[in-house]
Length: 105
Image (tube, rainbow, N blue to C red; front, side, top):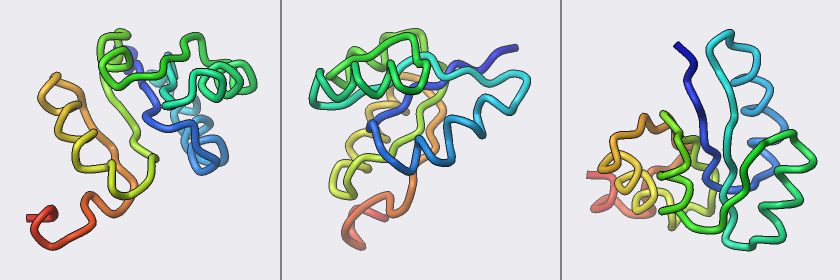
């Protein structure tokens, strides 16, 4: 079974480490990337061979992804992770999950 990944955040860390790690798995495929800047999403997708670029979380979560990798700025992690979980997606989030003890709990 192929695991279709969406990247939440068109980040350097995802480019340097995650895209190749996902593709190294027989069942891994990066199918979409999200950036709040449509231009950034399109450029990043083109540079990294990702078939779909979107600029909203809702669009990414409805893009046929099974799992997401979150690499946006720290204050966005929790909200994005919870939205993905609520949408039934598997979530891999870079640290930290939240910016306060309360968010972490």
